[in-house]
Image (cartoon, rainbow, N blue to C red; front, side, top):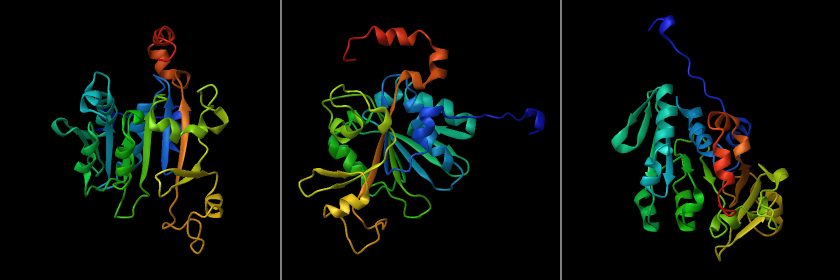
Length: 264
């Protein structure tokens, strides 16, 4: 291909998306309102590994019908990945990059569907609309979040919309003002640490040292030793105003949102 025939396809995150994509937490969650660009953020993330042979990324929606909706996860992923050299495998809901990254979209409609992933090794694990999933599904899939090659540190990334009846509301409660229901701006992106206790509750702290002082963890091991029991998590709120490109493309959508019921 000659120089005149080449084209450059440049993709850049917006400011709030960049905050999400740069997080070092084991579990990073973004969301808060419709049309905030959160799904696009999720799809951008694995592109940093597109030239890493054998790298695997899996995106979950609760049902494949949700992923296949017009403008949904499959359509957005197709529009983003194909120009960057990925080959879409439509029947398998996969995108395969020439150099090695494979991105798969999957559903997990029923709680027991999590067992279909026994034996899987998924370094890059994604949930779109995490509030739709059950706690057991999310927690079980953490056991699949591994990379035996040791080339990357496995992690989980997710999007969400508000749902006070979801287990997720409790999980991210520290980042939310419990009186108003809105995110606390200065806590966006702040990383906290937690361990799961014998009664399945979570013990949270601002630092790993605090958890150790509370009796969680092994005082003999270094604080950052991989055998320590804690994981890190963060929440980064996003609203329609964090998506100026989307608002410019469809300025009437804000009016539609403002005419919905108060809860929605």
